[in-house]
Image 1 (cartoon, rainbow, N blue to C red):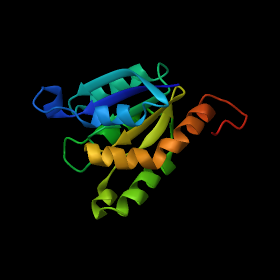
Image 2: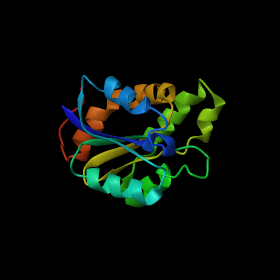
Image 3: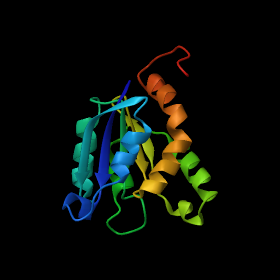
Length: 159
């Protein structure tokens, strides 16, 4: 089982003014292959996001963020992620955007990133439950192999 942390970034959600449905959508989609160890909701504050991503690093196999990847001035999730990762994995975000473009031209506006810190894979997902499901569907099959390789396995560990 893969261990995961789900981090929802939402000013309103962190104040209890909006119910998070994206975080639970992530947990639901990964239920067969992953166990949620941490689930948090934070406001769109870069330093808080960085601190939480650093906290998760090395404690779980995978961190999935949801929210804060768009063009609004408060959307700072990609910047926070880029500042703490050790290696970027651009193909993950590229694949999500490419598939998203088949559904909406707005997918090109996503600034999501993916990378590694302390053998933990960190991936930014959009904020809406529909977009979370669509983007996660694109990458879900490669997650076990990616995590296996990040942890240093030199053998073929793909399913």
